Length: 562
Image 1 (tube, rainbow, N blue to C red):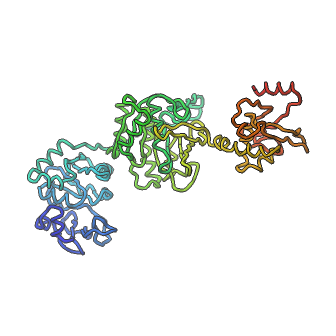
Image 2: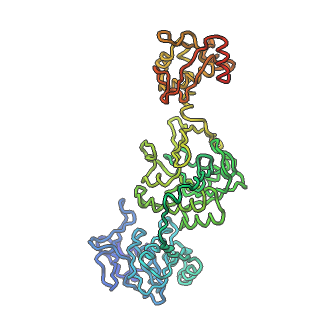
Image 3: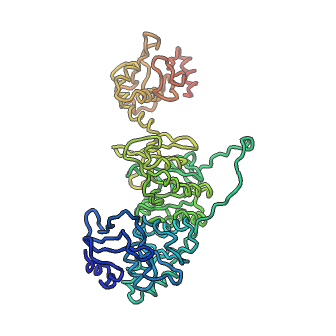
């Protein structure tokens, strides 16, 4: 890289760049930075050809001094009190050549390098907002920093009709100044200072003051699962079905229907799609049967410039019952999700919005690669899990089946539940708890074991492959359904009860719907019974009783409601 090559690439002449001190040196083009007095600063930018490790070819000259903004010597005086703030050096060259005062910030992350002493005599700042993600945050980073420092002037974000001042200059040529002024008048947006905190007196109360207050019942958007005015964190590894889960939830809420068998209060849904493309989202809702009249509103693309202000405005105008953020990270734009303080600061206004507006929020997020539990599987700081009223986690097994469970601050945790999905429509339903599914899957194996002959319960357990608690759960269910019956034995010491299948074959037994159970006592939690004591862990008796006569058999059947 040399000065001639740089000038050609950027659309300048060598003479134009030379008047700002640019020259060949240090293996490329040296771009000198200066202090407030105009002296060349110890640190300068060096522009070289791109490398695999530095794709834009930008380097800083060596030195211990901190980085400073570009153009502090003010090549163009700020006579009217308006200063333009841009990112980088080339936009400064453009504005200076057209007699427009400007200061350049060498990168979005260097916003805090701008100080009040650099803005003496400045009453208004026009901060150029470029259309990419980092550029959209740039004006607010500058404004927040300067307001914190005590800046008293007005700060505007300006989205130009071209990407940046240099692009506008190359496009408009001699009409650049007119176009710049036109964009400033038509497209500027005031960034107001933050609301000052109000100092108040003590607001604490004694226990006696609040002891007799009634306890308010939780209001549910989705019965027992999604609280109104609460935050639900929906977290899973990629491709586990988070968005599918959330879309089903959104459509059920919009229609006031049922979700996983739970009643939903109807209301408008705001879907903030920051990750999936518009065509993907709308196509998925159409496949599920979504209709034009369904009360769902969408935002597609990058997060709004001031996401919290935008969400507040959406709540005021449309009054949604549910906001879905897909994903939380794309909205907050936190650089380090492990930073507890940063996560807390990002969550606080979202949580306040939920409480004050009474709108439920679902934050879609990712899980760690490692297997964990009790909230530790959520990617990033524990502050994210702590912010949620409900955590719903999803898993995907090797066979493609999906399951979900919840950990709840309010309500009762949802046990791990198998989800069945229609591959054509994307509609999901609850296929029951995972425990029940495991029991159902093991029933044929238990029947196969019992078909070998008249066996005791211990022999059935040892002869069937699987977890003991699941085997016993399947065994008890099969007795309840009449697919296993008592063959012989009193159940007393030395004379154990032996069981057999009543049908001629296993398939006959499975297909039969007319078998009547002889006796049964299903435990509250199948498989937790102590083999020797005849009681489960809670102390409740689960002994299988044999009727002593035909009359007692009828009495026992009536007792069971058979």
